[in-house]
Length: 143
Length: 143
Figure (cartoon, each protein chain N blue to C red):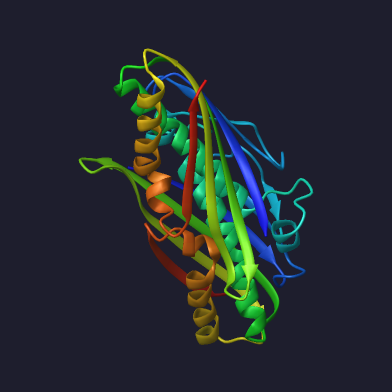
């Protein structure tokens, strides 16, 4: 069991306020966050959606590497991008989609088995299983 | 609508492989990720769970600031910590809990209204609504 934490300090209201987020590992940051930079142009500022994308890309890459190795693949190299969308409208603010794009190289596996492992990783990755409120899509190809 | 993305490059299998995660904004990183540093001691390394915690703390702080302002509060200062737990066992690897701890100061609001706004933010924050596969708990107090 591993527990990881992060803390955001925030001053002000949503529209004009600003926050700073620090992570327990100190691997990065502290980083600034604000609503205008989240809902509009990022201008070099991270956001909850970008952090979810980073979590999912990291988690998916691990899960997929495991599926591939279990399927007999070696010399695994993966590039995983997650694109997470926030929509703001009549239904409030919602994270609606999370699009995974996966390109990989590996020895000892064909395209069909690669795609099957990619789908298994999409189902089994802990972050996928946490994000059940989001429509997750997958585009995977062996290069 | 705002789409944010992150990319993880990964080499090797799960146990011995290693990844590097970059975010589109370049607000931080690239950061290293690996399974041993995720499931065991972090040793200064971030992880999917820490990134989920950073996403949730950031999102919750924004949502709560909005609820408080709508309830008439001013001079809002919040400190939000999210602690996200990965459990690895017979059921595989799962993100089981996400514990929010919120401490705040604000003018023009009493403890009951503060707690009511905190609960509303827990329900309405886009990251909360995305993480429906996780048991989210809330401990909120006005200081």
